[in-house]
Length: 576
Image (cartoon, rainbow, N blue to C red; front, side):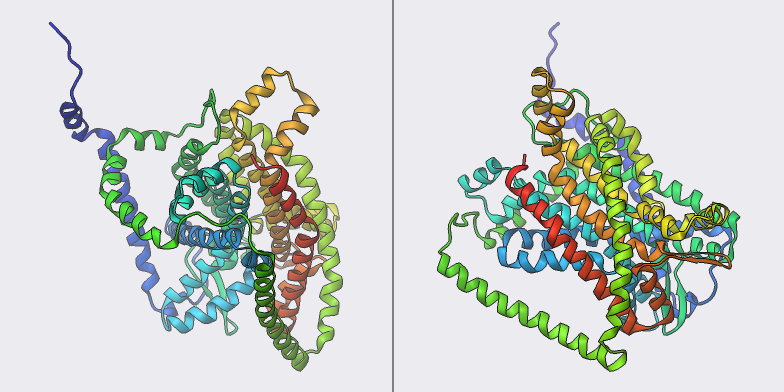
């Protein structure tokens, strides 16, 4: 008797059968769609139902958690679209880069509260009488806490693209559309996934501010874990705070298991290396998806769409940009662009100065400038301490897939944990020890900023090709020499991205970290964050504008004088 291998027809027929894994995946997708539709119905209720006190009955927490989770993922989708467009424009146009990157520095430094004030007014005018306006404003506020870090990271991967990949794209005359999807996006995928994970955690951090909104001196709240926790903290109810903390931990661990761990394991395929690593990341969810037939079926269904988009992408031209441009032509274009951009900036500055002079006078900038020095000192101490502590830890985690699987959910929980939830503990600790909030505020700022350095270091270490590490092992390079020759050059571009976003995140976190309230006790630090928080609470728009403008000046100056120079160094010398 001869044994024959199954032919293509038999294999196809067997593959077409529906397995238990297929049924499980289909059921999970249907349940997720049903929950999204069910929870989304709450966004169509009338505006008046958003008024009043938050219901802190623990039985409502599952619904509140689902509403918060829906906002987070909508904001994440918007952040990904924004990242692709903004980072690509900044990386591909030298003139746009001179405007877009400083603008990104400013956007990163603008507090979430300032974005929320503008977003609420705009969306309530667009959707009068509907909670949908408040939902859109909350999504925009969460988006502003997610998008900047992802954009910085993807921009860094675009400008530090390995030269051999750039030459490949030019040699085969890829269309710009194909170059993006086949070369640039895969090259930056690992950093994009890890920065997306961290940015998602940043959204949790500002959830309280985005779900409790003040409009025309009247407070509106949206159902969510953030609003629930804020109400419990304001009431001094430690039991309800504990329920909110437990719910947040379950959400973070669940999202990590079902979404981020499969993504990080899948992103391993984009590692730029000659030999495959001996141990790779694994994910139960990703293994189930790979064993089911749904991904293959989905690829077949979407293949005509992909071909259509590829044909449409030809309108963007081929990747045949000249390597050299006429100096005279470049100077003329630069001068015209500088005049146009400078005119817009000058007009905005003059208009802002006129508004402030009419209400408070230009002397309003004096106090925030001095207070900014105190916050600047906290930011510098925080970034320096986070670098010394988390860079070695991030390298160890990034080099070990086993440690990554263990540490990823733990770090994700810590990074996502809102500082507001720790206010009761902080107030008790500071009152018991007599420690000043000027020092304790640094610890609260660290909760929202230090993780940018850790996550980017992990992503940078994971992106170092395995064959380079094996070569170092074969040559016997160990200890300090290994750090100088391999690790520091390999992680440097990712670290710079983490440092610049950690710095900006620390400035933003100062607003919720320099004013600590629990029950009837309020502790206020000396700093620019407390100044902006006080101006927001009082509805003092001139001082709010002055505080935001001064914070933007500090952030942009720090980025221009320090971080941007490190960016240029990373582009020239440390791209893998």
